[in-house]
Image 1 (cartoon, rainbow, N blue to C red):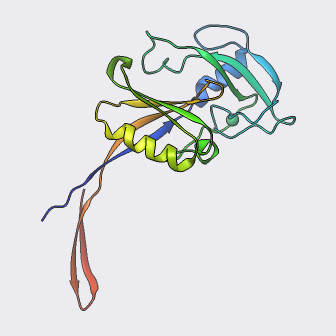
Image 2: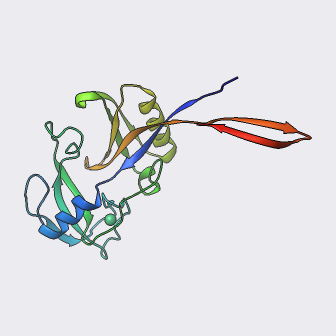
Length: 185
Ligand SMILES: [Zn+2]
């Protein structure tokens, strides 16, 4: 009997290296052209590219105006301030919730087609945040989720919906062990 289960998963979309490196080169905000401010980090906010937190008093960062809808709904912008590392860094890659953000106070806003607001929730722990993302993406209308800092209101990263079919595996067992296994994608 086929046992296919469709899991709804999500993946992080941080600010891409190309956009970030362009900002670092021209020191102007994308789309707006506002001058970028360079400084030594004064607090442990995350870089929106690698999603690692700055070491206050040590690491240098750029403050810029950024529209988090620029790739998904550029005609309905919502610009705000963000920080990135002053020098090139590697964009966050990985499934699930970035550990560096998971325990922060987050506001997770789910959006559907045409930037329709679907739902919003606030979290304070990694467990809260993981459950909230599961719940937001369980709603079929949710296309993507924006994470913002609840105390500061700044955009942190986007979560995109990814659908994954778990392969149905047939096993032939005999003598208490698997003799042969077929996977059907
Ligand atoms: Zn970075």
